[in-house]
Image (cartoon, rainbow, N blue to C red; front, side, top):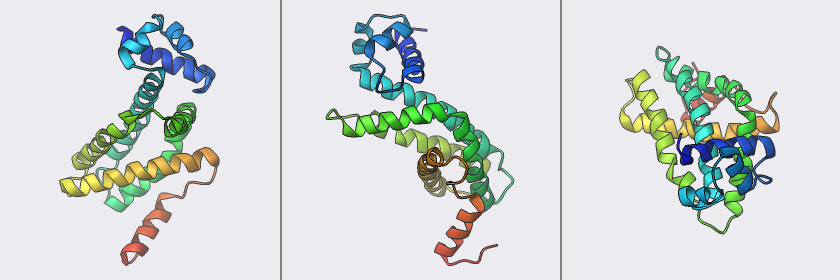
Length: 192
C-alpha cells in the first residue's frame, strides 16, 4: 500500500479504537506508520481523511451487502424485492454497527463544521448508480429512470432506517411487508 491507502486504513483503525471526536491526527499517522505531514499532503485535513475513510469502509461494507441482497431477488416481483431488502437491513446494520456509529458521529461533525465538506454529497451519485446497476441487472423490467428512482428510494430508506436501528436494534425498523402495504395505500392500489 501507499501512504494514501495506509492513512485510510490507519484512520479507520484509530476511529474504531477511540471514536471520531477523540481521534487525533497523530493517532492516525501513528496507526498508518507515516508522517503527520502526509495527512495534509494526501487529504488536506484530518477531517477530510476521516470522512473519506468512513465513507469508503461503510460504502464498501454496507454497499456490498445491499448489492448481494438485491442480487438474491432476481426472480421476485419488485414489491417482494423491496420487502426483502428492508427485512435484510437489520442484519447488515448489526454487522457494521461500530462503523455506523462512527459515521453518524462524523456526519454531525461535518454538519457543524465551518469548512465545506463536499466529499459526502459528491459521492451520493455514485452510491445511487451502484444500487441502480444491481437493480437493472437483476430486474430488467425496470427502465433506467425507474432503476435510478428505486435506487434513490433504497438509499434514503437505508439511511433513515440506520438511525432507527441504532436507536432500537430490536424493533424500531418497520418490516418490508408493512412498507409495501404503505406504498399500496399511497398509490391507491389494492394490497396483493
